[in-house]
Image (cartoon, rainbow, N blue to C red; front, side, top):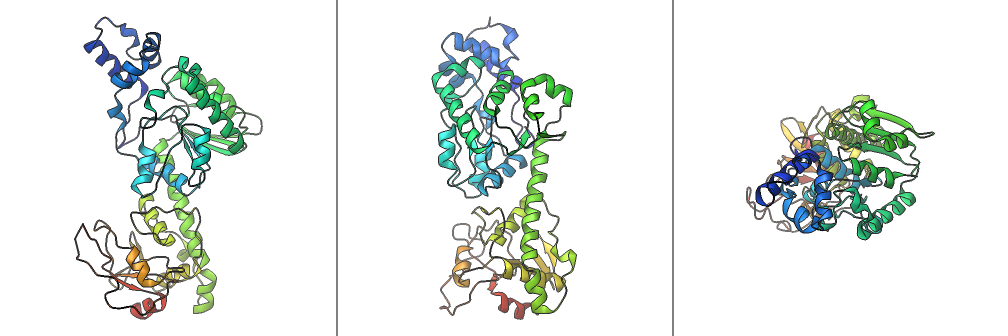
Length: 412
């Protein structure tokens, strides 16, 4: 619900649906249901028109089509990199999926445990046991009585089975756990029953008394025997973004530390502690630096949860820092020149350059250095330079160097 998504709370969905129905169909509809979404949905269950009228005609699905917020981006990042084992979502919207897809990942959500098992081969599963606005919309859950529907009951049963096999004794980070939808608290309690988590960290602005009142079964789960419980009274989007920033910072620190020993051995200079610190940029900027550290161009996703094959890469970063280079969102600035550093491990420099033909929206730098890449003699036109600013055929406009070439060019 955080900016810029501003997704509607349950009462607003109920209000919009009710007003539309009363205006177009039944002006005498009981006004007591106007802010009770479950009661209003049950009204249509009783008439056997939940799917045909309520879900297909009254639910304001357009309200769920909004820009993602930093929390959605964080969850998508954690699932693509498998930093999180899985994410369980009770949201209908497509915003987590959209973040992953916008980063170039073929991301798919799951509606039950069988689909989660398939997805786990390529990503951390996003299990939307409550339903999805884009996958099998008629089977979305709106009221407790639907839980006895064979399709939905089977979906929840498969989800519980998958979670019991994959999520037992894990650390649970729970964002917005206590919802305003009473029946959904019951669904959550049902699917999480028996997981015996090691810890439960709840991010919710409500105080402890309110959480316990709204969902006593979930409160009991979070306070089970040998469960470490933490309550963070903060925006879910802000907390997830902080976590993503910390994850990216640790990733970059690992990359820098991998180069510490070879840097000291090759230069005879003791590495200063400050050179091993990640720059203090916002999470999206750090994500871009992680992508460069992985050797991945803009438009493709970072997939690693920790850096690999980065000793030479880390060494060159430390050489730049020793020379006084200043970190920037694109890499560094040294002697009035901008420098981008890309992992070139096991790559041919000319082929790597060809892969980094990026959209003009990517801020260009004066030079790009690919530590670990091999520079082989190639024909002058092997990589066509393209035309600057051409959005149809963008090009890698900077000069590209391997490690030794960059040291000569920059005088370090």
